[in-house]
Length: 129
Image 1 (cartoon, helix red, strand yellow):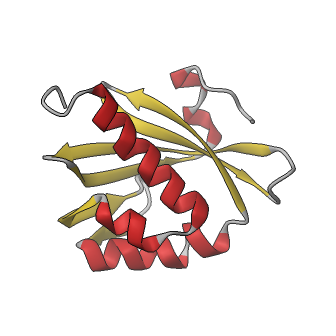
Image 2 (tube, one colour):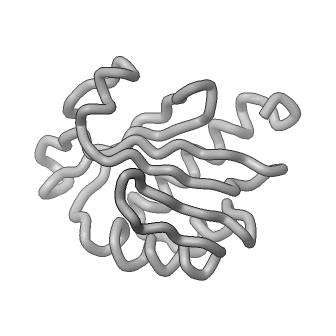
């Protein structure tokens, strides 16, 4: 991350969040390595490879969640984004998940999503936006 610099790391995190908010699969894929993985502990779901991760993103977060808001953050020194879910774009958005990234080169190589609002106070994040 030091080689990339803070500005590029922020660009990756913001790009990921924006791609999910807009349902832009092409923008999402452009940020990922070919062998990217996405896990959601403690759930058993685990996606490996660009195609599997993109398919998951298209089927679940991009199509089944009506409205997202995000806040860039960090967790254990790694770049992360806090996701807030709302019923519609104008209403309140409640704490949903913290997604942490591992980078390789200039791309995201690993995505780990921690579901649930219990993680937000640990990072001093608001419960809603």
